[in-house]
Length: 200
Image 1 (cartoon, rainbow, N blue to C red):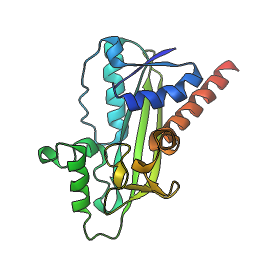
Image 2: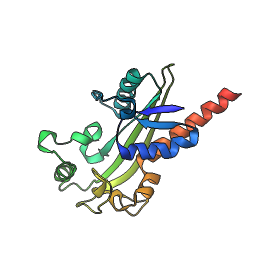
Image 3: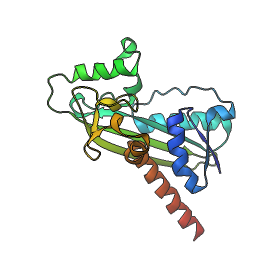
Image 4: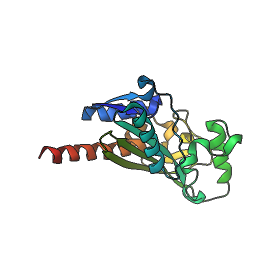
């Protein structure tokens, strides 16, 4: 079964392929379908934006589509940056490091550093089927970056389970415990369960 990823992000493609190939799903990025549309991510939740991306690309290609929307939520900031993780700080923050520094400045003097990464995966099919899975990875925000791997807020996101930041983990280990990996696991379990009931 061919399924189109509503993204051209190589990291997302690699993670989704690793899990979904075990379900007989061949995941291809939207560019392979000659789709260059940028969905209007104007939702206020990860669920809404994940759906918007999947629906926009499915309507363009007419094939089953899968989308991921993810970001960082910091407890002391009321859940910020949330769905605005990739554009946190507005026009003045043009790079990942700018946004990371902006986050640290917002948290200066705050003892509550609890945070979580969230990923919501949505699959839509032309016949009206919809599967949604949400994964979360708890952690805390450090005072300064540590590690050179990963991207975005990874250098300041410390995971107790791993004993280090996301940026200090090899990509394979991060992909095993990340929010997206957890969402994918739930997604895969849902697909297998539905197939089991369909076969009865």
